[in-house]
Length: 114
Image 1: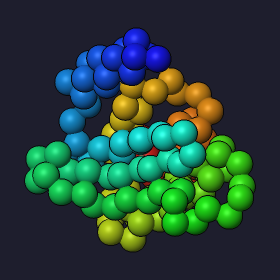
Image 2 (image 1 turned 30 degrees about the horizontal axis):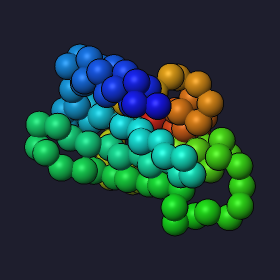
Image 3 (image 1 turned 180 degrees about the vertical axis):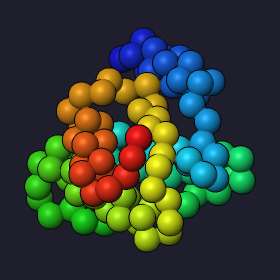
Image 4 (image 1 turned 90 degrees about the vertical axis):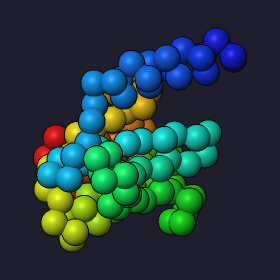
């Protein structure tokens, strides 16, 4: 288990060197726990969080992939309300598969461009 955690941390750092969020195009980052999924839109230059959403507040007994889709739609709506239309997607070392992919596709369908 420790090897998986260390591998993800290395992948995350390698990705973070390349992905930088600006005020015009902030970074949409994903954190995945065993039960929930969290998404934040961060302006790295200004050091502030523009929008965030998680499956903790709206847990209604739906599957993890379905809750990831709703989180993607929520974070996209919050971004668009604040005038952010384009983001850079940071998958945080997770594979682009399952919950991470569902969140990204849902955010795209809701109007975010990345």
